[in-house]
Image 1 (tube, rainbow, N blue to C red):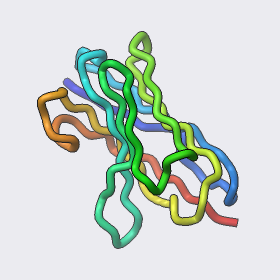
Image 2 (image 1 turned 60 degrees about the vertical axis):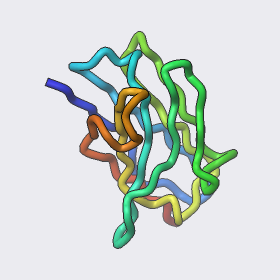
Image 3 (image 1 turned 90 degrees about the horizontal axis):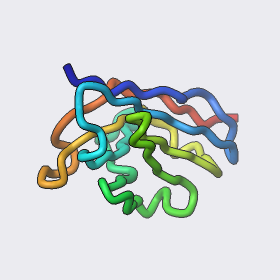
Image 4 (image 1 turned 180 degrees about the horizontal axis):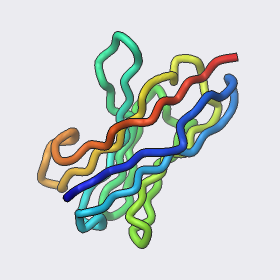
Amino acid sequence: QVQLVESGGGLVQPGGSLRLSCAASGIIFSIYVMDWYRQAPGKQREWVADISTARSTNYADSVKGRFTISRDNAKNTVYLQMNSLKPEDTAVYYCNAHRPFQHSGAGYWGQGTQVTVSS
């Protein structure tokens, strides 16, 4: 059974940092593209970043320069380091695992972890 389990969310002040983790099981992690998405209250889910099987990365313009996605294939885990957080980063963050030939958002999803940026 495939499971993606996010962790690391919480409450942080503007300008602060958090590191999210997504631990995968039940898949051959190294052959999956890993994405982070987020969904703010009342808004559609939006793509945040992805990392390919070859570790190339892409970012949404809204987080470029502030967030860093990485992966550790030995630990079957993808990370999202979030710096210089803003109130508009408040959302539930989800990880997604999909094969390279699948569209982003296909494949498997985690249950999400809440990030709240507030003073």
